[in-house]
Image (cartoon, rainbow, N blue to C red; front, side, top):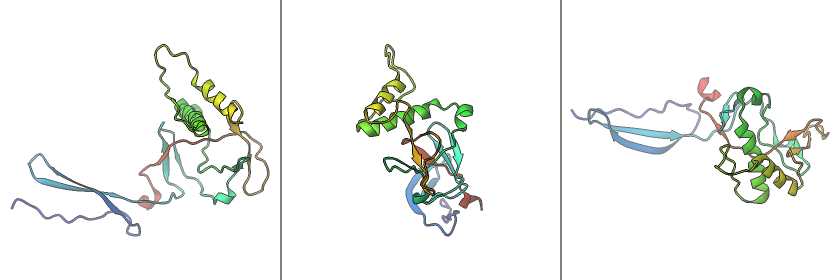
Amino acid sequence: DFYRDTPLVYKGPQTEDAVVDQVLLTCNEDDYLVIKALIRQTRRPEVGDKFSSRHGQKGVCGIIVNQEDMPFSERGICPDLIMNPHGFPSRMTVGKMLELVGSKAAVLTGKPQYGTAFWQKGADVDLVDAFSKMLISHGFEYNGRDYLTCGLTGEAIASYVFMGPVFYQKLKHMVLDKV
């Protein structure tokens, strides 16, 4: 008997819908046909889910707040995610800060920005200074900080906040799979 019938069993939470994203057909080392199904789900973040930036700055969702209760800038921009800055000194993810200031400059100018941490040979360019000058030309301070207003009280937040677009991904460590 060449084929062994193996039913496909979905081992995820039964309350969540799943989509077969891709079916892979291959052979194993004994030349038997192997079929793998790649299944994906779209889930809303929950408290306890793990996230990471492209620089390895990981974090766990601690609270989910309605958008109207989130702080907002004088331009009306409300952050999607607020990260505790105490992880920067220990992880030393300077590239993430460069991504923040560079992507903010890119959004304001409408043009992609070269923001690699690796310098080109012969180039004498300070990227942080170049990006900061772009921020100044669009009405921000040199260091890009924003003044935010508390969404709950309507009062100004008494600390400086640096806000900008940065890539974050949801990791596979989710509360729904752990319960």
